[in-house]
Length: 371
Image (spheres, rainbow, N blue to C red):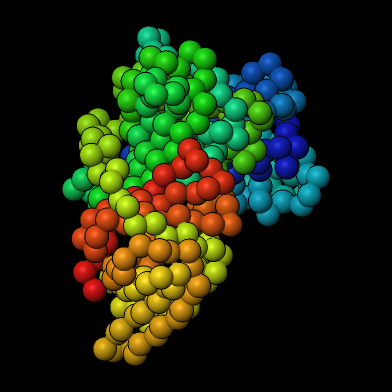
């Protein structure tokens, strides 16, 4: 294999694929990136056996071939090369190593055979559709914060995507950790009506979101029973799906909450952030006391002290005292696009509904704390 590639092109592609590689691997080849040179392109592929990212970039291929080398080492070398450098990759006459040269820099890197590199195949049968990348980005951005990190409830460690065809057609994303829930709808793309309900794992969601920053306008999505694939421009992300059943989230979304609070989102978030500085690290509990057009935020921590702050709000229901995790309140507030956040309460022990006047397709649920 003999290839010449521009440094910035190579670095961007390496940056995309190397992040999927686990730093500690019991299988050595999983630390490597597969380099395949053919025609006028260099293809890069990395995997952890659950996720695979592949990208194809333009290159001057003098001699086609394939090899694998350490993804992290390659990335760190190319990152340190000067701007505008031409990177030459050569496996011929280098004693079974990958020779990388750029200007006066010369490296000889350990390699493993490309034949041993694993591949994540995707079933031919499945649902294929295209959607705007900005919509996919929005679905992820407004739900990912609610994904669980508990290994025991593995089926919550991701975002649940499914099609809604009753009462309006939508592609819906849902995430919950049992304490909070985020639900967001997006226009249902043509061809996605029969998409099965799938749980995309946490790592795949975060990798996909990172890649979408450099994506074009459209993303092609392919969904089968066991895997999902996203293709945009010259990048392909393939991931296994979580093999589990997502809970019936509709059951925890309250419908009869009749105490409504409207509050300026920015002022509310800043006040919660200020008083929570003295809250206990574990629970981060904060008490909200609601009276007519008046909200009091109170934190009492025997170890560090107490704090309180008052806000003028729109509230006309009967008085209410309710507690929440301050971090969860801030997480939801950060997703509100409009100036005003709407809270709908039932009582101090029931789920609270939070909505955004600016984005009616977004819905959030918070479980209260005892304070």
